[in-house]
Length: 216
Image (cartoon, one colour):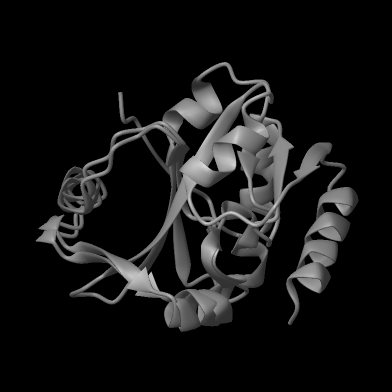
């Protein structure tokens, strides 16, 4: 399914939920560094998102953190109770299947874009065991989220109808006093902002009650 159609479906869902958004269109971007010049004027928290898998249990996780976080997957895995070294990046085909977006568009461990993250620590905090979290490959992301590289986004979770992807959210995004939090709307050529409370409501409506972790 084309990203334009998926974006339309997302916008229709948000409208039905009476969720107010703002959206900025920009050239296609694949990294936070490429994106920031186009969104630096926005008030709120920009996110970076990782689509992850547990190498032992094969569970899938979407991690959204503030864009400036530095991540250590082993630490994240331990915080999730997966065990150190057991969290991996999911491949793009799975992301497309579940979230309908490809690489560069991912949305599910959601943190502020400037966060420094240790995935081993996150895994431990999630009860996964240090080192058990890995970035999932793009094929897996395409399969599960319907987006590919550069598009990971929490907003793609409406595509995960069997609820096989678990959401991990940076506490700063919902409790940091931000006017809005920003994600790709199924395409990496736009950035969408919504209020923190509306993000939580969206996740609840899609059946993805988030695990909220503090990275401060």
